[in-house]
Image (cartoon, rainbow, N blue to C red; front, side, top):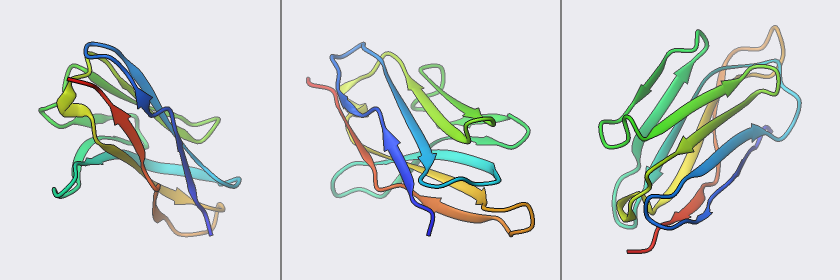
Length: 121
Protein backbone atom coordinates (compact mmCIF):
# COMPACT_ATOMS: atom_id res chain seq x y z
CA UNK A 1 0.00 0.00 0.00
CA UNK A 2 1.38 3.38 -1.00
CA UNK A 3 1.62 5.91 1.79
CA UNK A 4 2.17 9.62 1.34
CA UNK A 5 4.90 11.25 3.40
CA UNK A 6 4.34 14.92 4.17
CA UNK A 7 7.01 17.19 5.58
CA UNK A 8 7.71 20.85 6.15
CA UNK A 9 5.03 21.86 8.60
CA UNK A 10 5.92 23.77 11.73
CA UNK A 11 5.87 27.10 13.49
CA UNK A 12 6.32 30.31 11.55
CA UNK A 13 5.73 33.94 12.46
CA UNK A 14 3.02 35.93 10.65
CA UNK A 15 4.31 37.03 7.29
CA UNK A 16 6.77 34.18 7.14
CA UNK A 17 7.08 31.29 4.72
CA UNK A 18 7.04 27.51 4.80
CA UNK A 19 7.50 24.83 2.18
CA UNK A 20 5.49 21.63 2.42
CA UNK A 21 6.48 18.53 0.53
CA UNK A 22 4.64 15.33 -0.29
CA UNK A 23 6.17 12.10 -1.57
CA UNK A 24 5.13 8.50 -1.96
CA UNK A 25 6.61 5.96 0.43
CA UNK A 26 7.72 3.69 -2.41
CA UNK A 27 8.90 3.94 -5.97
CA UNK A 28 6.04 4.78 -8.30
CA UNK A 29 5.66 5.20 -12.02
CA UNK A 30 4.10 8.66 -12.10
CA UNK A 31 1.97 11.30 -10.44
CA UNK A 32 -0.94 12.32 -12.62
CA UNK A 33 -2.14 15.11 -10.38
CA UNK A 34 -1.53 16.43 -6.92
CA UNK A 35 -3.20 18.72 -4.48
CA UNK A 36 -3.20 20.21 -1.04
CA UNK A 37 -6.14 20.57 1.29
CA UNK A 38 -6.38 21.96 4.78
CA UNK A 39 -8.67 21.50 7.73
CA UNK A 40 -9.33 23.55 10.82
CA UNK A 41 -10.77 21.97 13.98
CA UNK A 42 -14.50 21.50 13.66
CA UNK A 43 -14.55 22.49 10.01
CA UNK A 44 -14.67 20.60 6.75
CA UNK A 45 -11.52 19.94 4.82
CA UNK A 46 -11.08 22.62 2.16
CA UNK A 47 -9.19 22.56 -1.10
CA UNK A 48 -6.13 24.80 -1.26
CA UNK A 49 -4.30 24.14 -4.53
CA UNK A 50 -3.86 21.56 -7.26
CA UNK A 51 -1.51 20.74 -10.10
CA UNK A 52 -2.23 18.42 -13.02
CA UNK A 53 0.06 16.38 -15.22
CA UNK A 54 0.40 19.13 -17.82
CA UNK A 55 1.60 21.53 -15.15
CA UNK A 56 -1.51 23.68 -14.85
CA UNK A 57 -2.16 24.94 -11.35
CA UNK A 58 -5.21 26.25 -9.54
CA UNK A 59 -5.64 27.93 -6.18
CA UNK A 60 -8.34 28.74 -3.71
CA UNK A 61 -9.07 32.45 -3.57
CA UNK A 62 -7.86 32.59 0.03
CA UNK A 63 -4.31 31.60 -0.94
CA UNK A 64 -4.04 32.79 -4.54
CA UNK A 65 -0.98 34.97 -4.92
CA UNK A 66 0.55 33.74 -1.65
CA UNK A 67 0.91 29.99 -2.17
CA UNK A 68 2.55 28.13 -5.03
CA UNK A 69 2.11 24.44 -5.76
CA UNK A 70 4.80 22.58 -7.67
CA UNK A 71 5.37 19.12 -9.06
CA UNK A 72 8.74 17.44 -9.53
CA UNK A 73 8.31 14.72 -12.14
CA UNK A 74 11.81 13.32 -11.58
CA UNK A 75 11.41 12.93 -7.83
CA UNK A 76 7.66 12.29 -7.98
CA UNK A 77 6.94 14.84 -5.32
CA UNK A 78 4.49 17.70 -4.95
CA UNK A 79 5.30 20.78 -2.93
CA UNK A 80 3.49 23.82 -1.59
CA UNK A 81 5.39 27.04 -1.02
CA UNK A 82 3.45 29.22 1.41
CA UNK A 83 4.33 32.90 1.69
CA UNK A 84 2.87 35.74 3.75
CA UNK A 85 1.39 33.30 6.22
CA UNK A 86 -1.43 34.47 8.45
CA UNK A 87 -2.90 33.06 11.66
CA UNK A 88 -5.88 31.91 9.55
CA UNK A 89 -3.49 29.63 7.66
CA UNK A 90 -2.60 27.81 10.88
CA UNK A 91 -4.32 24.47 10.35
CA UNK A 92 -3.45 20.92 9.30
CA UNK A 93 -2.49 20.50 5.65
CA UNK A 94 -3.09 17.29 3.73
CA UNK A 95 -1.62 16.28 0.40
CA UNK A 96 -3.35 14.08 -2.13
CA UNK A 97 -1.75 12.43 -5.13
CA UNK A 98 -3.23 10.58 -8.10
CA UNK A 99 -0.61 7.90 -8.61
CA UNK A 100 0.12 5.21 -11.13
CA UNK A 101 2.25 2.65 -9.34
CA UNK A 102 3.41 0.99 -12.54
CA UNK A 103 3.22 1.81 -16.23
CA UNK A 104 0.25 -0.50 -16.68
CA UNK A 105 -1.62 0.14 -13.43
CA UNK A 106 -4.62 2.39 -13.24
CA UNK A 107 -4.56 5.72 -11.45
CA UNK A 108 -5.37 5.68 -7.74
CA UNK A 109 -5.82 8.52 -5.29
CA UNK A 110 -3.94 8.60 -2.00
CA UNK A 111 -4.03 10.95 0.98
CA UNK A 112 -1.38 11.93 3.46
CA UNK A 113 -1.95 12.01 7.20
CA UNK A 114 -1.46 15.73 7.48
CA UNK A 115 1.15 18.17 8.66
CA UNK A 116 0.41 21.03 11.02
CA UNK A 117 1.24 24.64 10.30
CA UNK A 118 1.27 27.01 13.26
CA UNK A 119 1.16 30.79 12.87
CA UNK A 120 0.77 32.61 16.18
CA UNK A 121 -1.46 35.65 16.49
